[in-house]
Length: 307
Figure 1 (cartoon, one colour):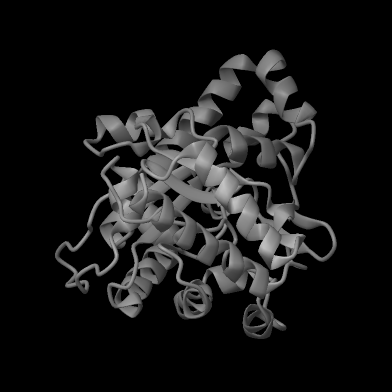
Figure 2 (figure 1 turned 180 degrees about the vertical axis):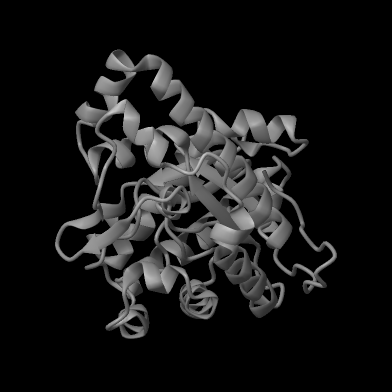
């Protein structure tokens, strides 16, 4: 879903709507660009802000989330901001405990093992009560952006979250979660539907709070419900989002420019939002991230001018 999102909260007028126009399939002067994890550990100011802070405590602080969201915008001419949060706040809202273990990542203290464990989950979730801190962060950030660029909100999709909840953390095979689909098909459907219901309310709440574009990672269920709720679902539109190998940012800056030019010549510059094939890695150089962003703008403008 994408929209201007001025609404009743008195947000500043949007000055750069290139991202939203591209998402709607409209013509743009340049190809818009943003990066997954653009607010991340590759930025020294991010590491300084997060120093000594528990990860999920940070996610629950609207002030800190706003600051972390804005940091990359101060460095780079990105065409969108994405709210600092985490997909696993939804399982937390359902009553599960998730902790961030150094060197391992997010870990569920009691993952779902048997069908009976579903009874431990909240069957009705008041998203404002449980996830209101995300909505507050979005509203604060929209005002703090002062209309510079649109703000992206997001959620994990049902299957992604179900996998985490059963595996107990990240998994390359998702074997435990997939086994549920075969061993417990009815329970799997109930869990996916519960997640879809919460995610739909959560994303609608993000829009109400000020998010101008929303997406669900690996979405298969929630987008249908959002469409029925009367929202435009950009996931079914013709706009392409993608995709330079993030490891290309380890190349010299001149080479990054060449790779971006080749990418734009392949994808085209219209109905296209430039990004990386994965989030930014912690050891990447901010200068090389900046080179990527600036190359997308420069080369797309040149192609548009001479096409």
